Figure 1 (cartoon, helix red, strand yellow):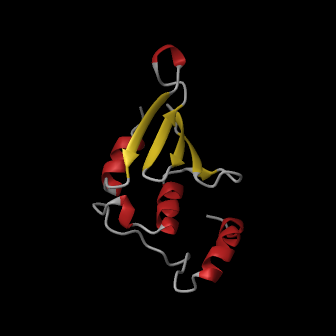
Figure 2: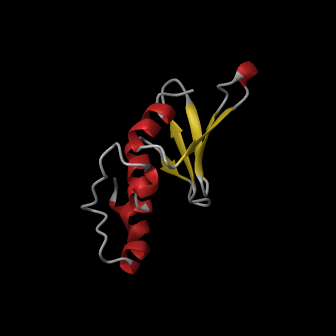
Length: 113
């Protein structure tokens, strides 16, 4: 991750000085996502190759060799729209509750449609 990315987060970390984004580690993979602080969820998405939308911070985009998707962090779930992955090239949308573990979400989201 670049210094420019971390500089974008500096206002957040200034408001929460007990959190260090440079030393942050994720909880165990079997931890439900609702037990992850938001910066750790963002770190997880970045580690999966996702890029955050600068205008809609709850939206993320990921592109893999065989598929691409938009990930939207809603209030009670994560919605994943696999672009052009459905029948006749339509988008395929799936929704996952935050009660799932990060490991389960890795397997459900990042293996593709």
